[in-house]
Image (cartoon, rainbow, N blue to C red; front, side):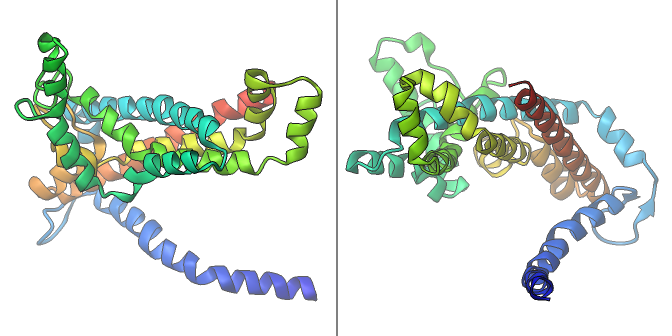
Length: 292
């Protein structure tokens, strides 16, 4: 009877948040998928056109370019943010005054809005007054000076440093928390067995926090696939769609071209692609865990 009461209490406690989450997440997703079957401009009657919007999405070369750019963002996040945060966590997981200060400094970008971060990096990359070209000039590397956000060949790669800088602090805190949750007995046993330094990290620490690393990778993938604000502030998807992402393409198709049905089809496609990427990553990591 006691167990039944506890379960009822848990269900009643979770019910309001579940209802709110369903109303503001699941219902809009279903509604968006529904409107993807219509030709609708946001006002007036919606005309049912079946799968035409979804067929057009997958025939649109801009969509595939946006997907390619999103994949670049995913790889930059997973291979940039996670390893960098892990290295910083190894160096800064102790509680000395200097390490606490450095942790706060690395985490600071998480406190700033994407608008502020985008404007900061716009000034850094500015071809005339930007600090990057200024430093290259002072170092005698004037030939390296570029139009960082205006050159369609390099613009998407110029967005990677601000992307990594923005979120590495989040994963740093996650990994430090994981390190601090490892029992002291484990460290003592490793010391007795002669496992120190890199050997201890690879053989003991990393396997113990591997589930945390998996969570970080999922967050990286999902966050990268829905990236919007930073890119929209810095380039708006240009020049010539060279920095277009799925989210910016969806926004421009919906609120610039006023094709709400088509924009809904793009947003539904983003959800499907995100689930596919996360599912594949989880399958690969679970296989690695089983074979380890």
